[in-house]
Structures are given as structure tokens and as C-alpha cells.
Image (cartoon, rainbow, N blue to C red; front, top):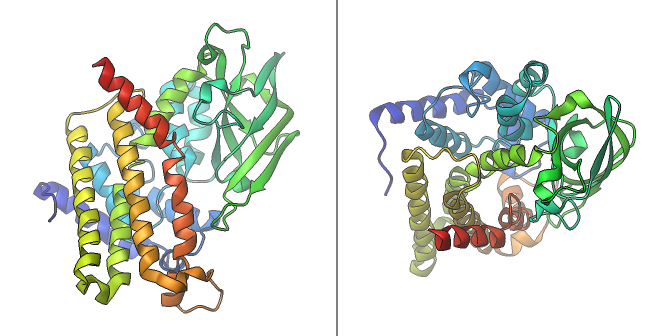
Length: 385
């Protein structure tokens, strides 16, 4: 069973599908098929194809390079990119910083940073979480003290994705430690990753990845012109940014991609009625999630702050994707116990990539605000209604 779309939307879907089939670089496609890790150059090679097509920044305003697509077209684009075997968009500059600069940045900041973000010429990472200040983001302790034309920044960030190959970081810092509310003393800064006093330390994860990092800031001097919005008003920028981050965090396209992978790997096992029932249940739950997401798009949701509906999609979508990976691990059986090897053939490499994939999927329900916190937001919204 599939949801029905208008003929115009189906034509758009086919256009995206054909583009991915012809333009996705062969090396990137092979790495995706084998479950291998992508480096910055792999991602940039694909993102620049999207840029040349005019599709790199669909969530931006038309003035600054957006596509002007409808919400349904955005949904179909995100879905078909993944179903075609392309990597998901992980550029924090495109997904998160770009919309913030368009909404709150100065004209000088927009003209300086947005074109390079759009071309993937400059890579950005997100400096929000700190030890003890992840889900409780407002308790962050990294400080920025004004010193003439600069802020002097001291503190530590953690779980900073792709900091190892980022050029810049957008960062939340505390500029007023005496504010009445912790949210009122936070500012939003743009920091050069090569600035003296900034150190990146990788964090090894269970799946063998090195995409997460700690970032230490020791008397890092940041020009005042790199302040986005007003001083002590960074929380407004952060809420706007998190709304964009969580907007696609349900991962419907990714779930469809992995369900197709599950069916392909399962092969004859789909003849087992017990196993087939588990797959069908996941398909039904995904269909319900997609229908819910489309209803919200149809209602023209444009909240600047993360809404309860977004939290619902995040919780259900991330847990559903984890369930799909769990079932794929079962399909792989003993082969999944062996880590990917350089000399594996394609079929064996994909099976052996499932254990790292499964372990990596554990973070889905943590990043972007843990699912426990999302449930609290949902409960507050329902009780206040």
C-alpha cells in the first residue's frame, strides 16, 4: 500500500529519481551500497551535483538560493534522494546555519557565508552540547567575554559531529552569567576552527566511527562581527535552528530506504509467516508515520519553535528506524558479528556493515533532543491544551 500524490507531485518525484540515477557519483554509490564510511570529499562531490542543479538548499528562501518547493515536494525530494542510494544531507551549514543567517544575520554575514555554504566550499559544525548540558541546553557554561572588538571564549563542547573536517563552528556561548533566566544570557557566535586556542579531540563510538568530537576553547578570540542576532538573544536563534534540525528528523525517507534493504537482504525468509509479519508491521507503522507527517505539512506548520507534533514525529520515526536495523541484524545472523573487511565482496561487505549500522542507529533517539525529553514536551503540550 502506498499513499497517493497528485500527478504533478509524481512527475516531480520521477524527476528527482532520474537525477539521482544519473548524477550520483559512482564512488559514492558504491560506498553507500557497501555500507562504508563517507569522507568530506565524498559528501561534497554529491552536494555539488545538487548545487549545480539548484537543489542544494531547498529549505532556504528563494532570494538566497532556495527552490520554492511546496512542503510535499520537499518531502518527496528527501525521500527519493535516499531511495536512490544517495547519502542523506548532513551539512549543518545547509540544514541549520543557513536558515538562521537568513532570518537573523546581517547583510554582511549573509553575503560572506551563504554562498560558500551553498557550494559546500566551507564546512560547518554545531557547537551546542556540553558535558552536562545536552538535553538541558540552557545550562551551558562556555563563556564569551567582550574584549574590545572581540569576544574571548572559554569552555568545552561535546558530541560535535564532523568537527574533524569542519572549517567553522556556530556556537552557543554565555555572555551574561547574571541573567534572570539562563536562556536570556546566551549568544550565538561564528567561530573559525583554525583559531588559536581551539582544539578538536575525536570520540570513538561503538560502531567504530570517528564523526563525533570534543571541542576545547581556551581564550579563543572571536570578532564581534561574528555575533548573529543581538547579544544575549542567542536562544531565539537556537530555537529557530532546532525547529529546522528536527523538521526532518523522523527520517521517513531513510526508513523507506532501509526497509527496502531489509527486504532485499531477507530474500527467502520473507516466506516465513512470522518473519514476514514483523516486516509488514514495520511497513504499516511507517505508512502511518508518513501520513501523519503529510497531514502536518498540509496544515502549513510554520512554528519557529519546536512543536509537540515535531516531537511526536521525532520519537516515532527514530524508534521505527531502530526497529528496522534490529531486524536487519537478525537477518545477517553470524555474518554481522564480523567487522567489515577491505577484501569483502559487495554482498558480504553489506552484511558485515549491519552491526556497525545497528550500533550507529542507537544515537537516533538521542541526538536532536533525547526521546525522553521529547516525550516531556509532548506531555506538556497536551496537558496545557
